[in-house]
Image (spheres, rainbow, N blue to C red):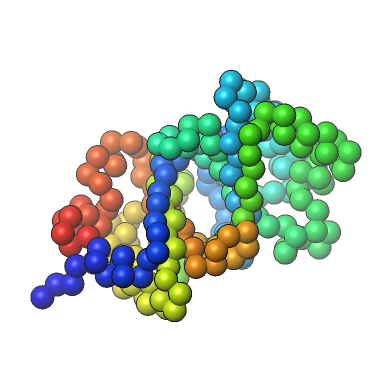
Length: 225
């Protein structure tokens, strides 16, 4: 008898949720290998100020990050969910940089970096920062350009079930994406949130690819997935 994977999965979880994001302003989507830790910043922009915030990021922040030597800085805009919400992902330099200074401070200088931060702050309603650790053994990242449409899903695993959940993803979920050659990444929150939270990212090339539902459901059917 085939085990119902959906029931097994929810046997590990306290809560789960997901949002659909597409790339906004940021560095090139073709990025080098992930560092050990990534800094995730979730910004909610004030209504009516989206254009001002995007212009500030595109014309000041991104050039400063490039000048400061940042190799990874991805930005996504929420499509389904809070449409004023943007998520940026970049390396946690305080763990990896000898100077411990963010790339924007290196690129702009301390005084200008503070001015730029204050300028963007007037357009934002809230900012939440947390740190995630990539789990390459639970991920499939085919060579080539990063797909532009991504579904981010956060799952909070029950205490004591971390090992079982990781094994479930490794043996039941990941092989589906590998066989299909589809993009799938797994991360774990380590700072700024509950360390029982796991984030999975599955990406496709266009919105119409989502019409059939999640890849496991397409492969196994709704009952099997």
